[in-house]
Image (cartoon, rainbow, N blue to C red; front, side):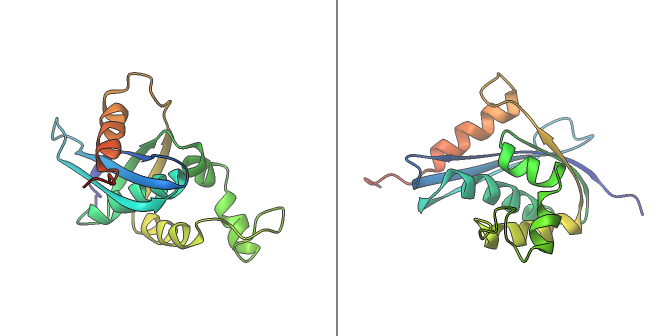
Length: 151
């Protein structure tokens, strides 16, 4: 069975860290020639790292079927956990770091591991704020999704 090829860009943002935060994803079905979906949301009290992880989770959740996914993020925290194989080490150590401290955001990491197992994900690090059209769009959407105190 040939899996559909999907390109995803994700980003998270926070106003203060911790503080109110937003996440966003731009989803493109390869061959469609255009963006096929944009999703975003926010939380009243969170961290930038949680928003980065949540953006990837929400994007993978949004896919209707198992797919080959090229997921682009400017978060070294997110991408390096997969590319540098931090996650298997955390799992072998009972979700503890090399310094024997509990892995932060473990709830989100566990969900992300589960979701990424349902797809064939290629993790791609992009440089933030470097005029990458889709990364810039995610940044804009994530910032707009940050809950405001006056709303």
